[in-house]
Amino acid sequence: MAPAASGTPPIRRILCIDGGGIMGTLPASFLASLEEDLDRPIGEYFDLIAGTSTGGILAIGLAMGVPARDLLDLYVRRGPHIFGQSGGVLANFAGGAWRRVKHVFAPKHDADLLRAELAPVLGDKRIGEAKTRLVIPAWDADHRGVYIFKTAHHPRLKTDYKRLAVDAAMATAAAPSYYRRHRTAEDVGLLDGGVWANNPIALAVVEAITLLSWPGSSLRVLSLGCVNEVYLIGEAPGWGGLARDVTRLFMDGQSHGALGMAKLLTGHEYEREAIFRCCPDVPKNFFKLDDTRKITQLKGMGASSARKERPRIEPAFLASPAESFNPVYTLKGTGS
Image 1 (cartoon, one colour):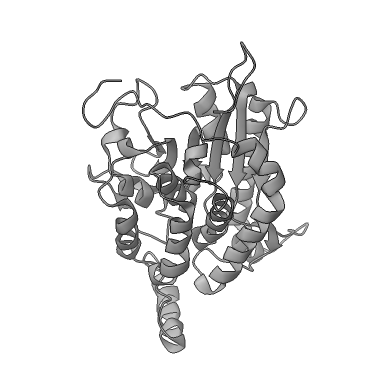
Image 2 (image 1 turned 180 degrees about the vertical axis):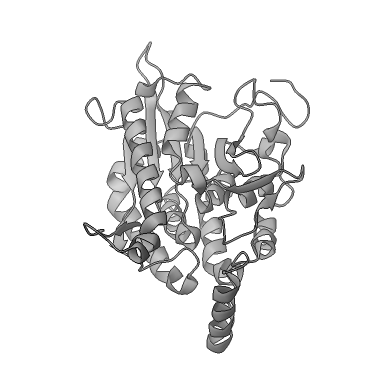
């Protein structure tokens, strides 16, 4: 925990990671590059970690104590297999053609492949084994409402800590039309948290201020996006063009709204620098959620961004590890 003057609340450090499919390689590389200069996994330098979809997978791994370099290795080595693109040129071409046809009437990708690759990383670990507080959004399609996996960092949070970490990872990453709805061990049907919180920064800040009772003025947030696509929509676009951009519009609107709320709640930027947003600009359609052919470029961009941002990130977040997290409830019982 960062030192504080007498009578002043300690600085609380929050890490938030956006959704973005295989583009999660970029924030994974960013964190792995920063981690090279640390003597322990980078997740231990934060008091709270929030992540959505691919960012949720990273957040859960980091909170469990998995080094960022190992998570990056998962994306680089196993990403092509997860998205069915690990064969030769002809096999990948044929597989891609089939998936495009399949996408018309069924989920494009096989969720079992993703779960099989997450198993060696998360195994049978429960959310209650997290070393850092977690907030992982999903969407309950049956009840048309939010569903958030959380560690037991408040007396009200009595159940999620018993749940499998892989269930939370699969749920937050179950992007509609890309993966089938995820059924948890309790048969709750969940979809990708990106439906409502692809950028989870507002969710994390509200959690910190309300349930954790951390003053907004004590929060410092590192917010990592995957990429920021640069595009313009004309004055009167045809429906075809607008339809292609509608998902991007919704995601952008949610992200900017979440950032705006987080800024108001933390006093950024008129009162102090509280939010550190890192999300490099790229041309429209240059990267795709499930196109693994540019993993190497994403990895390089993450490392380059970390090199650029290191002078302001290190003193703000990485000067010392965070205070140990002691959950209200543990897997051995319900004591504090």
